[in-house]
Length: 99
Image (cartoon, rainbow, N blue to C red):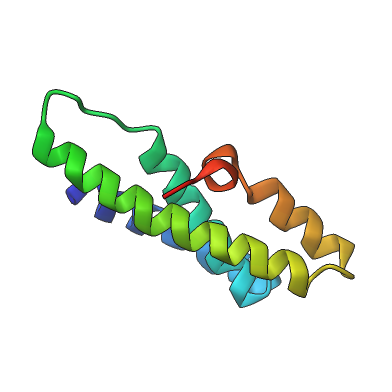
């Protein structure tokens, strides 16, 4: 949990800058996609409790990011600038998430 908080607080300055130029929903998608990728890259087979936390974080962040990705892709379909930003941030963890 401490790692999650450190990551979130570490990203706040970046998000503040991003929100100045990006639509708010796109900035929120980028945040969720980054969290999804972060947790998808973690694995601790020796600590079952930690693994449950990681699995829950993956389901929450990747699930939300995937729903946002689909919604935003449709919403910004005619805006190539935002489509590019969305596509660049729809990482493999977001695209391949299956619950």
